[in-house]
Length: 294
Image (tube, rainbow, N blue to C red; front, side):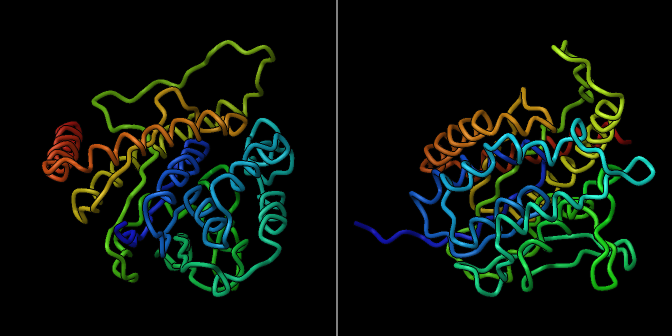
């Protein structure tokens, strides 16, 4: 039996769509020796738990709790400042999940990307409490208040690095595996789905949906750009087409989709032409998007 290859795992942001990372992990941990993880936003959250030593099943058990799902959804959040949620419940939850464990004590190296509003630059968390890194990296703009920490004012790392491939050189692995969960960059922006609900949702929910739609459009473009620039060995597109950014209560559905997509991608990876097909696909997406912005 051949020895498993080592892999640096890059997990992108995507709000609830990022729960698909758990399903992807369930496949990758069966095939590779994941020896480092980089994450942004939801990717930083899932990546932190994996870095600590949790397997995909343990992470899914946490994500599947209804009480946890409510902490991330504007539908249930009450505490806010000027219409922006303060994120205190989210930080409390991260501390419970991690028991205030430190990144430097993790099973494998970990980096979370956050964006500092003061210096207007990306800051990397590779030491300190996992909970602080998770909170800093996941402060969704205009939804959660910035995380003020040690003189910094952190917001979602996806502002600059929705799929942080530019930092993979900090780790030494046989492969780089990128997992993108952002919706595809298409010719036309998708409309927010005002589907019928059993119970009407507050206006703040739809406002948050509109904000997320705008954020995702920009971040999806940046992710595609980085994929074409840095060319990871494997790219897994795990954006569930019917997924909603605040559907945190559907963890199992996202998990199943992530697992299915990962299995399909690894099967395709065995084909000699895999990398060239991936290159052409993402260059085509980037070219089509650039045409729209001219």
